[in-house]
Amino acid sequence: MSEPLRLVVFDVDGTLVDSRTHILASMRQSFQDLGLAVPSEDAILHGVGLSLPELMAQLVPDAPPETHDRLAARYKDLSLLRHVTAGQDAESPFFPGMRDVLDSLRAQDFTLLATATGKSRRGLDRMIAHHGLQGYFQTTQVADNHPSKPHPSMVVTALSETGVEPQNAVMIGDTSYDIAMGRAAGVATIGVSWGYQAKIALSEADGIVDTASDLFDSLNSWMERLT
Image (cartoon, rainbow, N blue to C red):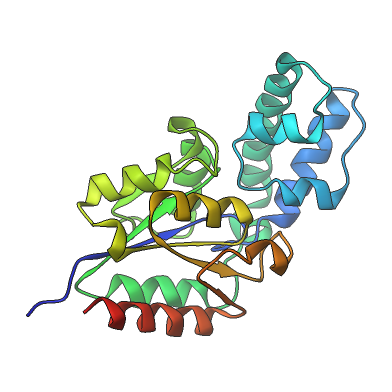
């Protein structure tokens, strides 16, 4: 009897790559350019994973939607500029061991990979090109085409595009938004503790891991239970 086709869905910022420096610098400059008080580092990082307008609305809830849109647009422009001048390796490197996890999963015959990220299509494509990840992900879901996390749309679409059943899929992320999104889509969830929210925020996950090696072991155990 053959193994079932399975889907491993990754969040990107805070899970695969460490964009903390890049996000904070671009966010601070965005607020400064619009003459607004800069939110705290904790507030900014806690909202990573949401779509940009949703994040801006969370950071400045009393501002009108037009301001949220202007902040989001300015952030996108600054983010592109920083990537061009600083480079992905300087400001968005892989977390230790995560490239090895992707390489190992990609080599498995019955494992498909996907992203479900708050990044824009432009931002994700830039990251994939810079890190040489072309062909790694069978489906890439981004904030441009979906409601913000924790709405399950990104995971549901990834399942639809790959033909994988929810019981054979897992969502991996560093925030409560990722875990809630995965649960709403009916898939397994694994939280990673090295990201941008406190470990307690991942309490609803089916499992929490502290290292890339632990993640790979957890995924292998999950896959064994599918057979």
